[in-house]
Amino acid sequence: MATDAPPPYRRILLTRMKFIGDVVLTTPVIRSVRAAYPDAFVAYMGDRNAVVLLEQNPGLNEIIPFDYTKPTLIEQTRVALHLWRRKFDLVVDMFGNPRSALLTRLSGAPVRVGPARPGRGRLYTIEVHDDGKRRTAIEFHNRSIAAAGIPPSAGKTEIFLTDDERREARIYLRWLNGGTAPPDLPKPVIGLYPGATWPAKQWLPERFGELADLITSKLGVQVILFAGPHDTMAVDAVMKNSSSQVKVLTALPLRQVAAVMSHCRVVVANDGGPLHIAAALGVPTIGLFGPGEDDIWFPYERAEGHRALRRDVPCHPCHLDFCNREGKGFMECMRLLTVAEVFSAVQGAFLR
Image (cartoon, rainbow, N blue to C red; front, top):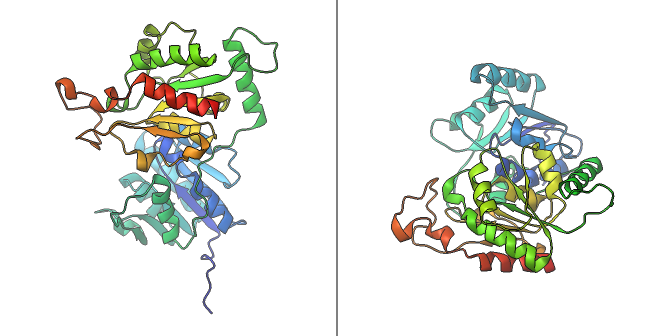
């Protein structure tokens, strides 16, 4: 008799091996899988530096970190043995690079889903082909579980924090402002992320400095900068171009960064991981896009205070890490984004 019930999987592995933002963008898949299989064992494998954001997720029974700092052969063997011992009956690979494809195959799962790519397709039992239609990143990942017979039922990203994590972040923010007594923050907080993995995705840092001054003077809030270990030059440029009492948040573990971010009223971020963390926490997020495609990588609702800002230029989307144009065309996509335009978006989100 025909049925619409999903296949009877009991042990499921989901994997998106790399990149913080990309891992966050797979969280709707976790919710959909758990909704379809409330009693299944569901695990997630990925870069240890990114999958910490999946801790406390009620849809997961296990998180399997891959440590890229260890020798490849040793770590790959360790993880492969771990996967084999778990006896998964379904693996859904949402990355599809050579390593993730190989680990998927070595898991021994009888059903293995992954993207159809030359040289790797034979490692999967179900290949997901690109039909050329434009989709958001969330819709793209949903196709992977749909190929395995699992109905996508969730569309929002999410990160789960404990009450202790939020409380400690509030204490940290009060400490940044020189006080510990008040139970609440002395001022609302707006966060800025001026860094980027690649220079082409970076809005001019000096404009972040000007934006910080405008936000401080017009909205009466505390501005903090979120910065990663490679964002020193960007942070220095912001601080040199700002006369406000901007606080810089550096050297915190990723979950603590997320906890602090959860207390922000608005976050302004270049196209990168912190942008997706903020949106997944439900913080109104202003995403600044240059070479990237906001219709794909910013699947967030404007009705919830989120907004992507991007200017059309002849070379978009270039997908370049470094701008290859010269003269007036150099970084044109970012230079056309004005401080006034970004502030207007921040103000709208703050006052909503």
